Length: 145
Image (cartoon, rainbow, N blue to C red; front, side, top):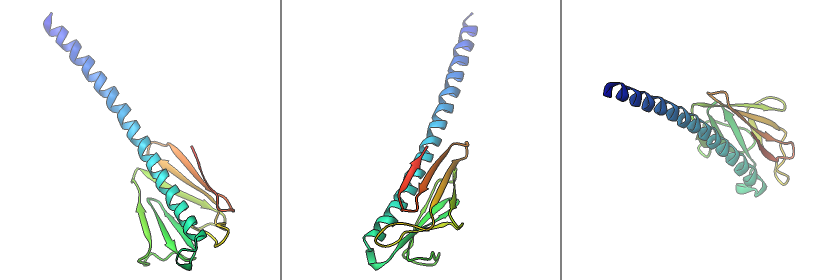
């Protein structure tokens, strides 16, 4: 009888462990998506703020790649510019920009903070979960779940 009891207890422990591991894994993936969302929002807001402040007498923009966002100075992104500030994101999250007129860059205008590259950035987790960041023509930046 003791062997059966031990097997039952072990089965319960294994099932509980698998259940807990699955829940923890899902939570970690959700946290990763939220962290990437916050990073992208922060980079966009910083670029807009720097433009409005005319930091360095220049405009600023953000270049969006599958797994990175880069804040750059000026109207055109150059990968070789040493002043670029690149943020690599978690490989489990993919960024897909859809901007008016195409392209993968958002550049903010002096004085108004507006942009001609308005649209969205879709953040997609490997699990299929998504979040959307919207940039309006006026330069307002919003986050949607």
